[in-house]
Image: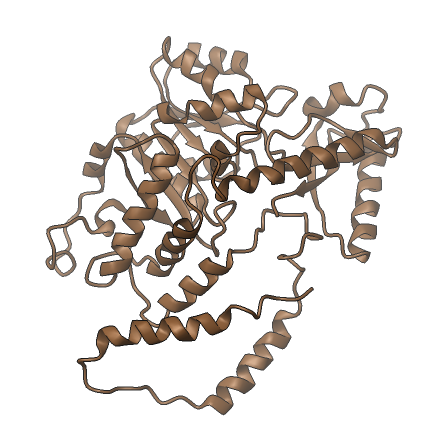
Length: 426
């Protein structure tokens, strides 16, 4: 595998341009011991060799997608300034870039009016969504599917919000009948719909939840940390596309640019449809917000210091690859095409067990055996054998309730089965 060494020289050219903005200042340069730097940097490179080959297509395990070259370069360029996007004092230009980039993401979801910003990742973004949910519906329960990210249950515990889990159907989506029974019990304030569950990439039926919202009074938060950008793909199944088409009707949306958005870790994004929720963030700072009457992003954030570098990298990426249907960025649809092709090949091979076809680009499959425990052991062996050939997969433990209909001849001597899992996101 060859790492990209064709683009770093562009950074030197860009630094020359950046440097001219401070030409009126007295000369100042920090002392640099280049010999020591070189020694430690080369040692660092040696140490970092102990990694899986995340950028290579043979790494099809976890949700790790290499940043685009423009994101790497822009991020590195910004580090010579090291902006802090908490207040405009610390990140004047990068704060403007963040607002522009987030507005483009909001527009991708159909919102021209919104309140939003970048976060350190999906967990912190969902924290803010659930915190606002508790402010708007104090004492009410939050529900999410059994296949939603574990962070929702944990964050509700941190925030002191009642939480309840909703069972899933055979495609690992929130079961709408189960949701309706729970809604009949009352006191549900927010329903979390996941568009791209972490284990199977399943897409909850947002369109059906919106139908229930007409009968019951609850907010809808969409966790699209993994799948959000697929609203641009144009090659989803009809049912999956129906969910994405109604994203503008959600109350809040989380998406992770550090997944399909081609950004370095960590870069998440939280967006609210109603900008007035910003009043819940209001706080006084005796030393921060005096230099401008414009919005300081720290005024709509639970986080304080925030890396402006993430905003610079995202802004540059979206300049190169606009978030529009049919554009260059929308070629992420090839990830789903690849996942469907992988699924078809697995389905035709009698060594393997397949469940539901992929809705996005995550494929899960098992190894044929007579018992549940035998399937798990075979998956473990396959995982190890593949790694020896530098094909790096992931494993997922799925419950009997989800897989039973796909494995009619298996003896269930265990409540769970280990399957193999691939995020075909390159």
